[in-house]
Amino acid sequence: MSRENHESAAAPQHDPEQNRFDWTTLIRNTLLVVVLSVLLWLLFNVELPSAERLRDIIDSWGWAAWLVFIGIYALVAMTPIPVTVMAVTAGLLFGVVDGTVLSVIGVLIGCWGGYWLSRGLGRQATIKMLGSRATSVERHLGQAGLEAVVVLRLLPGFPYWPVNYGSGAFGVGQRDFLLGSFLAVIPGQFSLVAIGALISNPNLFTGIVVAVSWAIVLLLTVWAYWRWKAARPEHG
Image (cartoon, rainbow, N blue to C red; front, side, top):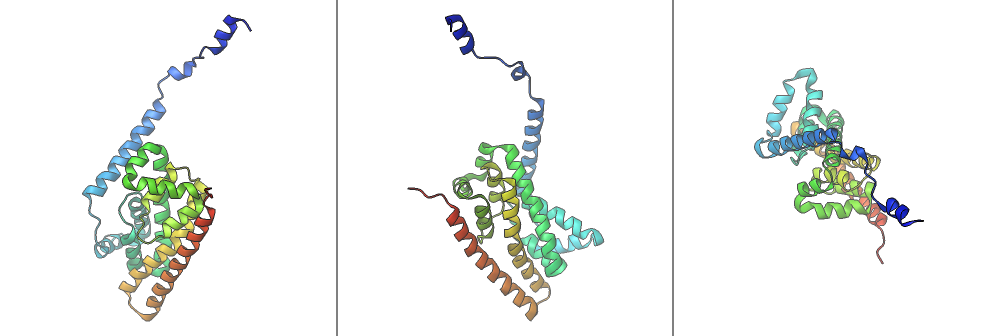
C-alpha cells in the first residue's frame, strides 16, 4: 500500500449526518428535565394527606374512585414519597382483595414509569439523583438482575424509588424488572393493605390475614435473599 493510500485510509471519515443538530434528543431531554423538576417540586412542596384525609378525597369520586386511586398511586410511586400510606389507604377504602389489586396495579405503573424515566435521563443523571444510595443500589442490581429486584423490593424499609431508577440506569432488563417487581410487590402490598383493612374493620379474621401476610413477606425475603446471593458472581 502506498503512503498516499495509507494516509487516506487512516484519515477520519466525516459523516454529514453528525453535523446535523439532533432536535429529537434535545426535545426528549428537555421533557425529561421538566418531568424530573416537577417530581422534585412535588416532593419538597406537597405534603401527602393523611390516610383518613386521602380516603375522603378519593371516596368523593364515587364510581371513578378506582381509577383515581390507581392514578394517584402511580404518581406517588414515581417519586421518593413512601408508598406505605397509599397501600394502607387502599385497605381502608376498598378492603383486602380489591385494595391489593388496585395497589399492585398502581405501584407497578409508577415503578415502570420511574424505570423508563431513569433510562431517558441516563446513568450519570440517575447517579446524582440517587445520591448516597447510588453505590449500594448499583452494586446490588449489577450482581443479579431479577433476584436483586425481588430482594430489594422485599427488604423492610427499603424505598421503591431507588430500585426503579437504579434498574433503569444500571442495565437491569425490562423483563427482569417487571417480573421481579410483580413477584415482590404482591406480598408487600397485600401486607400493607391488610393493615388498612384491619384499621377500618378490626376483627379476628382480618388480624389473622395481617399476621399471615407478614409471615409470607418474611419467608419470601429470606428466599429472595438466598436466590440473590446464589446468583452473585464468585470473586476469586
